[in-house]
Length: 579
Image 1 (cartoon, helix red, strand yellow):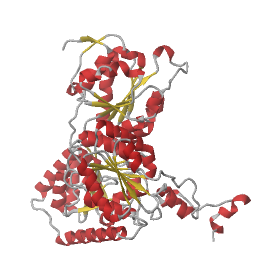
Image 2 (cartoon, one colour):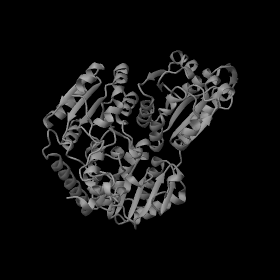
Image 3 (cartoon, helix red, strand yellow):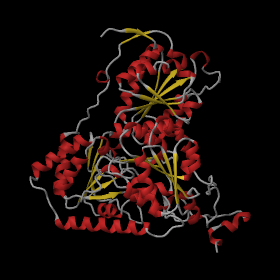
Image 4 (spheres, helix red, strand yellow):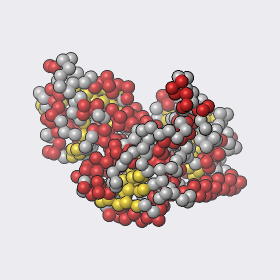
């Protein structure tokens, strides 16, 4: 292949085209303007956001729904540092992401010049790698390295290039992705797969835990066949409610905070756990509802693409480093060879069905408790009932958004895009915009508290500008309710910083920004309003007025303690002196 003369900017853009990058998200800046100038001719759409944090959230979700690595960019210094939170979130979510990070020009590095920041040091701890371009002639090579690591290690990579390195001349061969990285993943070692099959064949009470890897590799059908062969209930990991089919008879729901008791009771009695495409995170397996559901004596078979995650939080009997789909397929083949006929256990099926029904009745009954004006659980229930089967739902963090883990059900091609364990507020709405970019035909909604909405409502302008018909379901309860619940339980109803003095309504704000605005203050209006908004195919803010006193349990009861005070001026705040 002949090398061609080009500028570093041209080499970068041509490499992006080879990676099938159709758009880049960020805010315009002089540092990368020479590259940006090429985008229209190259056919790359630049999507300007209102805050750089939103850019990485959008690309995080875009990658989750398409499987293609997202790309974002910002001005050196404050533009790039504005992305710290969202890049850290994508990295912890195991989402491939490349951050094009222009940095200060080489002639002025170290002089504390305008917008100078050691961005590599800032991002080193929150990315899989930071790739610094050492010379303009290495612009394309280093970008290839960034994509290679992002895909291989499933996370964010910083591609740092001094702003003066966009200029000049080099000779470069523009390579196709297959020439510098490998997409295909193996199934794991034959020995480990055989041991897994043996354990599952002998198990009396096997349970499957389906995680993000199952979603990414599109392995739900294979997981279903394994479950049916063993009559094994299937739980999904925390905030991956789309990890299995909600309408399957063996689906018992999500584990983790505000998860399903049906899943927890099923897992509690397991003798063998097949954990597919999950790192079995600490937070996602903590006791809930006072149920210590993750069994200490069960034999765990863990499948993960990253060897660093095997047995990281729970000791395993068999660890399989491999693609969730490929490994599951081999396990299915092994089970079918060892046990030709499915092990249909009617008693277990009846037990699973009873647990599903009990949990469904409990969640509906909790939702039907009257609220003033709307019980947030009721709103979540009505949203779930109104969502089309192919809907994509992005959820934020907080009291209401996390309670959605109880209510969201996904069938067909529906997807759950959640903030996950980084747990930052302001995630859901820009993520929903990115998901809509990735799947333009799908109905997309975001579930957001009014606290998180204050961090993201500026992106309504982006939705209008880009014609992204996302419905923001904003739960207006007037407080940071997850923290308010802590102040109720641990600080004797002393509320400091928990209340949010909102505008009178978010509807005129949305309309002023060019979007539709709908306000509902009755439970019976929620489903109809959401249906109307989704069918309109216009950016919409659905303001749901909720009861701010109906609060979910604390995220972690072990994270706080009742206050003990020693100085006399604070003694009245000591829990022993509460009346």
